[in-house]
Image (tube, rainbow, N blue to C red; front, side):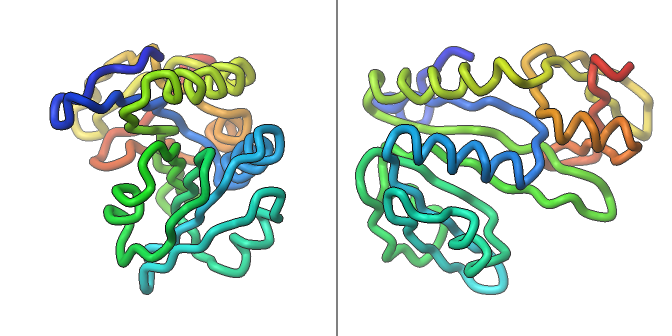
Length: 191
């Protein structure tokens, strides 16, 4: 899980932890981090219109999400958010040093993969976020096979993580889908 230089923005460091997780688990992680570290939180709805809202430090994240549904992304940072953006790209650009979580719903097709991710120019700040992710990942499962449903070809991905909620869904037969494309993930500890 090391942070890596970003080839498009050489002055920026990038971190991503690919995983399968339920919306509820990601909301709980964000709420816990915000409470434990007095972080600022923004929530974004992409459809039917783009809307962004700020959750005050110590605010009720679940209640704020319920008011803005369907929320698709949570951003966290150590300073207040500027929430005048007109789209999700502008929001992240205007609020540098943010850590993001995309919330994927369970659909009729299955649960799509997501990531805990950030792009920052401050290496120390990014290392702090990576530390939070590492602590949280201690309670997650690791390792998955990406399977092409047409050819049956399999690729092992040791750095793919999943939460207990995603594990339980997969054990119940819910397909674990790639973030895009047709690949299906089979968790290593369910094989």
